[in-house]
Length: 162
Image (tube, rainbow, N blue to C red):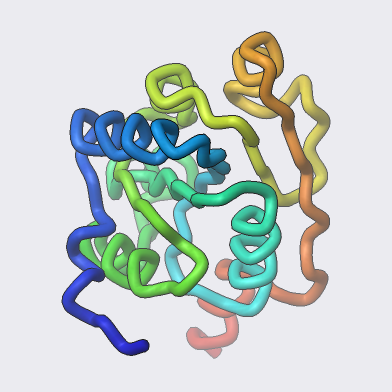
């Protein structure tokens, strides 16, 4: 079913997201959380988001703000501004909620929403993942999804500059 009118309603501020999560939990639904900059969406992102969504009933995506993306990736990033990235992310079928956060890591956000499953893509260890300790102490679990080799926003940007 095509319902593009719901896209902007999938973008939340913290208070709205906390209320939405309470509503989901009233129906015994589980929450998965992942995060990233998601500057130029590619096949690797879709694979990672799909795997994250499969871990619970609802998927919340924490999106780095423009300011935090610049701190992490440099002054030339992000290519797409946070509102554009949020709209693209919210338009994805597997994503149920999007929230923009300003910090370099989503630790405070994770503590505020306390997902059942924390999902990160990449070559991380659990000790390196912001919020992993807190989620596990709360009875949740942490999942590390493998990277889809050959796909990278940085490589896409470099290719465009050639």
